[in-house]
Image 1 (cartoon, rainbow, N blue to C red):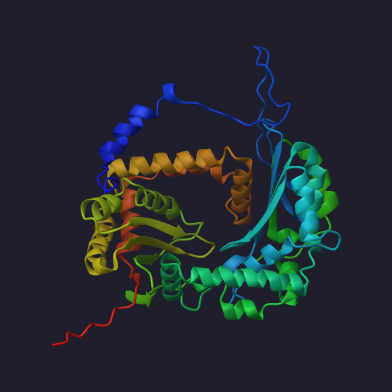
Image 2: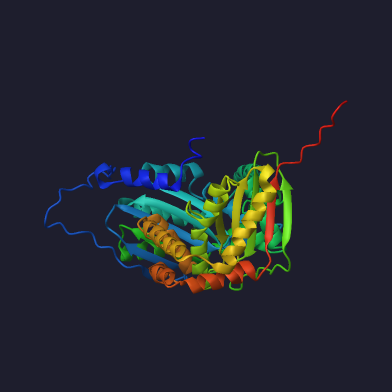
Length: 465
């Protein structure tokens, strides 16, 4: 009850009182031997510009020399993901990504993990909407080891039936778990309705039927088609020298088959012809509402205005949060999200509420979206969103692993490896007029899908005389 009474002014008052330089304590855990006494002659480490190199087979390699810390981040990305899947292969990108790390012709999955853990390293793999990614982190002395393991995984993963069977069990459990989460159920229901007969309607984990059908031959064929030189980009950021990276990667990955770039013409997502309301039931104590519109792709300049609308609609000072949650008390949480892919994706507004309040919250929710679609953002909202979006990007760029991953994706998608350097000017260039035009284009001039997940209706109890 006391938490509910806390206001925005209370938050501001506490932040000003306690989040001060006088109260600040910073603790850091540093690699052994990395701390040195400061002196007037100490020269700060130089961070190099991103260099774009190319192996003999056409594989693009991005290198950023950064000697501030003895760390190296590698990110290998390949076009793939949902956009290359179908109803029968749904979930294959995720399954391939996880199976890649479970053993090669020369190493077991346990040996891969143990060799990296012994030097403080880590390897992960994941599948997304447009891509498959393998990320590997090591410290500076172990560049050769990291490169060898990364190449081994990409070139020589065996994915035998017993390994695939175990990974399928894990993926099937995730599907079952997702089916019990109202937010995931609403999102999947929305996507199926907004993108009929299109890959974006598929679930990243697949369905029980599609995953059950997949086998080792399917996974190896997927690997051989998409993990090829011309379809990939590898970023290596950290305490490295570009010449050394080029030499090692040519030795280890110069034999990767050239192949072809996938998704040169991504499947165009359909336009919705009329507004649709779809519902599902789950035995949960809350209801979820999601309003989804066809969005844009990663190439459209409108993406920057949509990203700012997304940011302005998702924080604790957003009009949705203040009006629907704080003033009207109708929602547990409220926000926005979007999917931008090589094909036009979606923009969604979402909230969670008491099932008894669905009708009243639906009316207020749609009213706020209509206001946004006609009036756009206020000057204060736009300024706040710009500051947050640029600040988040600057923070991300301080982390070599995140920066390497995002830069590799930008290059892979054809946006250029230096897109992050242009983000601030692009975002700051968005005007109130741009916001109003884009809001009207995507939220007022096209139909939407309203997906509702609620608990089943309780049967009426008859009164006995």
